[in-house]
Length: 132
Length: 450
Image (tube, rainbow over all chains, first blue to last red; front, side, top):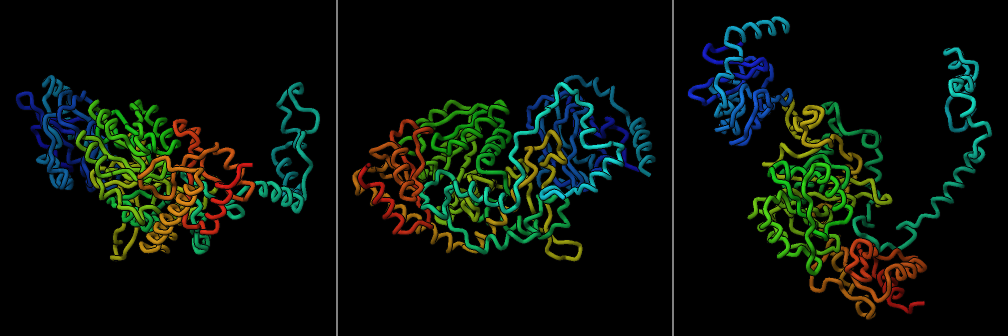
């Protein structure tokens, strides 16, 4: 069973986000990194880029293919995790402490529409059952 | 039994019986009577095989080729010598029949050939990564322009007016379709006009400068100076060049190039009426994930043996779909195998000797033509390779007609693409030309006008 921390919000596309004082930190879930397989490259967005909720703005390349990552909420990219440039495998090791981008969130209440840990766990459980 | 169609009358009968049709004509019964052609077609009667071969030989005899005429025509496609071993190697069924690898692991031989080709392109261009080739030099340059715009997120592509006209046309078309700005820089004495370049760069938003060296006139550009200028403006420096010339000239990668492209015909590929040959493109690591096309890599298998794979495929459209960096998903495999065989046969020393011969023979031809008093260099004092732009005292059309009468294919008439060069004539002298052939050229070209 994939790891799903309690204090994060999730999308159906397997991104997570945590918003504190209008700043969001986001990444991909444990389920996502497992499904992708070994990550070999992460194409991060430019700082200052404006994104809408649901817009693809990051590409995580794995041995199996290239995966678009969608923004959980609308906002502006404030910081990118440059550590991933030289060590993309960090995403496989721990996709929660190794975030992808930090963003200034337009409307923090947007996150309320995302899944909480319990709802996301239910989704993942269903997917894992289908795969098994 | 039909001579050229494999199906026998019996085969046809069985097919018609199977679908329940009485005759071939019955198959067209759905087409209304009034729109049908009633009279027999105007096609000539069926020929026997010997008759057909005779007809085709007569037709092909109307072509002038570099085996039965002496060729001084270049302007992008050149009459270089190709050792017989090249044809012998690429005629192997494993090479002739294979397409670009789509199930790469089982095509180790093809992958190894690609890897060797890529390695040689990297060594000659001085770049870190080459792909498995492009369709031709013009589309390679256009892909480089698009790549530069995507990497810099800027919109203007500058191109020298002394880049090959067909390359310019292709780059312009790609820019139009991608809504990029395309602008041409004038030439000053046959090379990029530095003042005009600076002015264009000061205008801002320049994603890339594309130059060619040796350029369309054969002239060598001052690559490092141009690279510095465009880098200062945060643009990329794109160099179109020639693999064979790079056996003699400094690698563009050591002179500031960010992307090196070109047409590969000169390396072991016949002129083929202008194609097919192949294009090459090479970049350094920062651009490798944006490079179009297939890339072959070397690795080891589970038993530790040297093996080859297609790598970095996440750029390509069979994975990225509409977000792929390019729709190029093939390569010119047989043509690059020819190039690999040719280049490995020549080696660095052979290429250098070919370059030296080209330089010496070109210099001799130009000097002798100048001596006749009927020709002068269009760009005095500018170093050139293989092609030299000359100005004649008659129209190139008249000159070439006289030469053709003497079994000589004359130079390229520059009038259409460069009206500013009155009576401009682009002379190409390859290593294949002999002193005797050059002397004949000079005698006819410098002789009396009838």
